Image 1 (cartoon, rainbow, N blue to C red):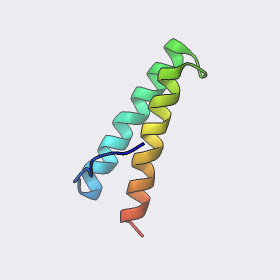
Image 2: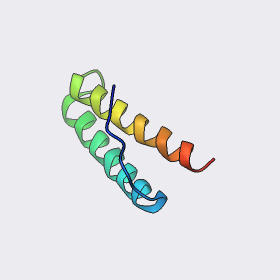
Image 3: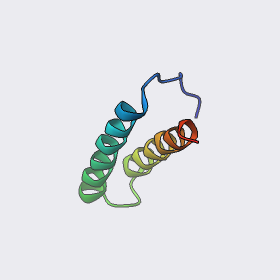
Image 4: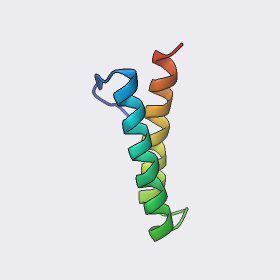
Length: 57
């Protein structure tokens, strides 16, 4: 999963994480927990949560 660096401050990153979390919930409710789109949304959320944790160490 190679990504371009995303330059967001901690506050904007946190807002984006909340957006991704809500998006994940919506996708999972519509498609189910094992659907490929749900898994992709979960992986994207995990990536940005890890980035948030990394910059706040």
